[in-house]
Image (cartoon, rainbow, N blue to C red; front, side, top):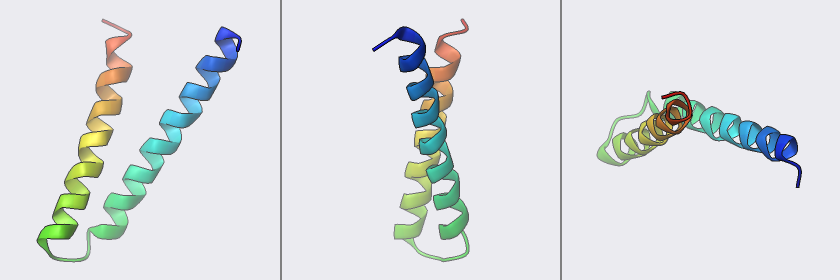
Length: 59
């Protein structure tokens, strides 16, 4: 696989993961409970992980 194709696939995959996490947080937010809180925390942790991975390139 070419490097440019690989980079494009990674960008699309990261974008889809971020979108899924944001939608998860928004959908689960109105409900109350420890399970829903755990789901939101996991989704936010994944978003922070994606951000850290993105920022690692630009140190």
